[in-house]
Length: 251
Image (spheres, rainbow, N blue to C red):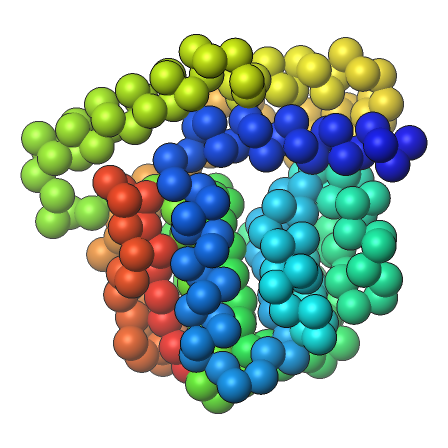
């Protein structure tokens, strides 16, 4: 069965790498930042962890660190739990809705050196995002960092530039998918459904999530303003390819 879960994760990885330009480079850069901003890394929180993509990379890169990872998608959580089991108790997968505050009580009063997220927080409505960022500030150690890697729309980008970003991104993903080495988003979820092992999780997923786009369209400038108001400093973009950006902040 573990072989099946490895396959579920590997097909997810192929799909995401095809659809998100420079995804691996973004992961590597974010880990470089964690490593270079701390002499020792004891604890990392991965929010919106999905099937454990970044969690596994973090566990390999920082073998002494305790890692807590949170998501709310029951299908992806089942894949994550199976694929991180080899790390034992130092990697914990938690099932919570980040729009609430209940997840805070599952962290064992841990204070974190780094909190990271990739391609996830665009699902969070602005009022909930304000609370989430405030909670991040509270549970970070002094000098701890928060990074979010995602596609951020900036008001400083003209409409022409935004359209150009989209055109180039669509060309990259289209070329990647045309090689037939990866499924698109819809194909991957059909593949998961057809395997027949996630029936209960898929039913629960449909209850938790409505269909259609979940992007809250919060601008980069709004993210920066919220982080500043929470008390973070050194807030800004430290990596970028098109509108795929890494937003950084420090406590």
